[in-house]
Image (tube, rainbow, N blue to C red; front, side, top):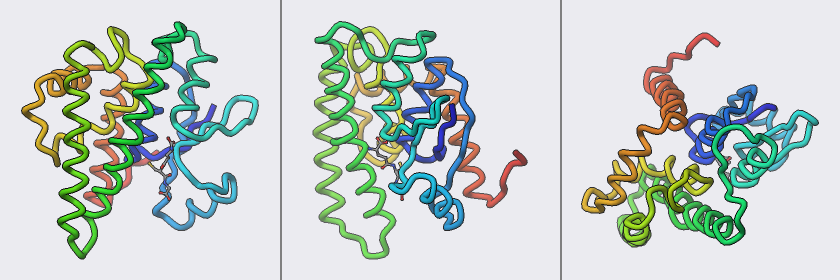
Length: 215
Ligand SMILES: N[C@@H](CCC(=O)N[C@@H](CS)C(=O)NCC(=O)O)C(=O)O
């Protein structure tokens, strides 16, 4: 299997967590879409040019982080089961995965874009921050009854949430949300996330210094 991804892309981090949870081997194909040459090559290979993308052993291309994780969960029986078999719990996990992608991860992209823009659109920034705070408050209440996002076991919904939390804790005022703070502390001790974070920090260092490690 090959995974086309970038360590600084949150949707890529979501899939990396799943791969480590499943203890699945893969060839890492780091793809920087900001660089015109790799972007063109990747677009030629996969015209929608979105990361992450999984190439399976039989050559099929699977896009969309949640679908990639469902594929991994079906084909790799080792490691953590990320989608429960029981139908009600399965639906709940998929529901939270959608809520997190749509109402947390995607607004974070808008927020990052607005904050990077030269012209500061403070009103829009405040509006998105307010909506996200409401989402996090809901999640905090939910986490009071749940050790991980959907109960006692680690699932797809946790793969979706954890990559969103570094930026959110840095930029939103979340420290009063006790359950979310507890969740974030426990997530940072999860082995799969620690492995992902190592790669994220290395990539951030490379961005800051302009130095690339020797492959
Ligand atoms: N719904 C998709 C979202 C994927 C996505 O938006 N990926 C971003 C990077 S995190 C991307 O490839 N954007 C295209 C670009 O940067 O040109 C998923 O879950 O995989």
